[in-house]
Figure (cartoon, rainbow, N blue to C red):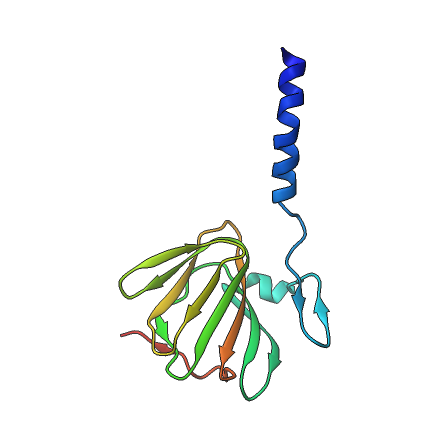
Amino acid sequence: MRIILKISAMPLLLLLAACHSSNPAKLVYSDKVIQQIEWSEVELKRDIAIRHLYRSSDASTHLIRLKGNERPHYHDHHDLSVTVISGKSIIHFKDHEVSLAPGDVLFISKETLHWAENVTPGASVVFAVFSPAFDGKDKRKAE
């Protein structure tokens, strides 16, 4: 009986191992590939660390590492697309919230009240695309 259980459990273990990838997502640009994200000691100490990756007049891309919570805010002139790379978080809107996990994609149109809450021990990491390019100034706190 024990041998039968071990043999029948093996396909399940292989399936679970295949579904859980230890390889982090890679970021692919036309001129470079970022295989692994390495955060500096300074960035690791911050509640919110932002790494600027690319900028044109039309869009900018960023890695955002969140340990705690953002404060509720708006972007008056920028749409925001986010892909969760690692960790779990909750995105809050004025009247609802949504749990996010790796692979989830989020779109926030300009003038939308929102804030993110990390619910992972450690931090969550997202790839963010602002359109037009984010200048760091278009973040209005909610009153």
